[in-house]
Image 1: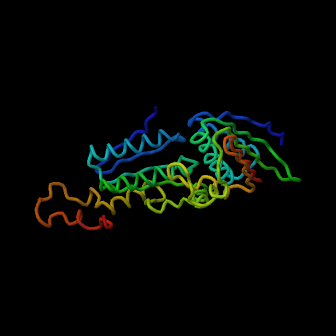
Image 2: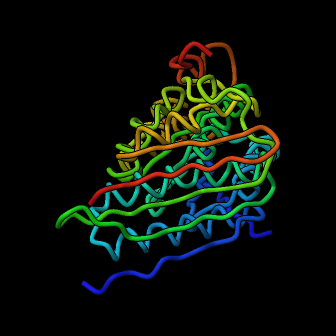
Image 3: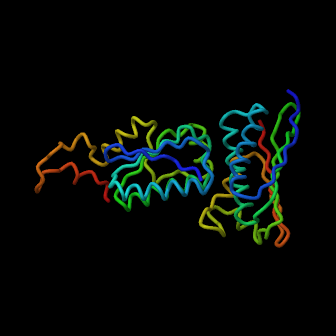
Length: 144
Length: 134
């Protein structure tokens, strides 16, 4: 079965879905992502679906579930690159993907993730560990 | 435009769902459908064909061009000889499903097309006919 590559950059995992996924491939990606979150302690996941021209209820559900599952593992998922025709169809289908964060493109998605997880740039390298030394990590957890 | 020939696709496994989506999109494209309408009808078929794979194991997808005056349309028939749907009215209700909680299938597909017709008989099978006008 084909596997979708997952790239790690800092605390973020990047996935770019490049083909129309069959159901097992979508579920495989979900499993791979959760394992990778565990293995790498990633705090954010960015899924780029800009080349995907159809999201049906199954894929919509898999994306939503993945975001919830990653959330339980303390990682935030942002889906980016949803095409206008896909957005229209999703809403008409009744799947509004309310549970997932979305951003227009990769750049904005990364900015959103940085904001949500207190991005790598904002954590000084070699910061002194101790009480109150890493305030960025404690705020903005979105209730989780 | 040259009249498009009908296409018939056997549906036997989940890879056929992907194949069905590709065929429907390219058929709709060749009939001059807008990108949004291509996506609507392709998504509707994805929902219907998944039901075949999930509940009936195998079935058939038929695509053909239809006309009403100067208007072209895409007529799609999705049929199987599976277990059938005991209560169609209930299956057409929002959120109702007998599978793994993936509601939306039928009512969602219906909203994405212009005409939607369903026939089903327990023990005999199910046939869904949809039309999307250009």
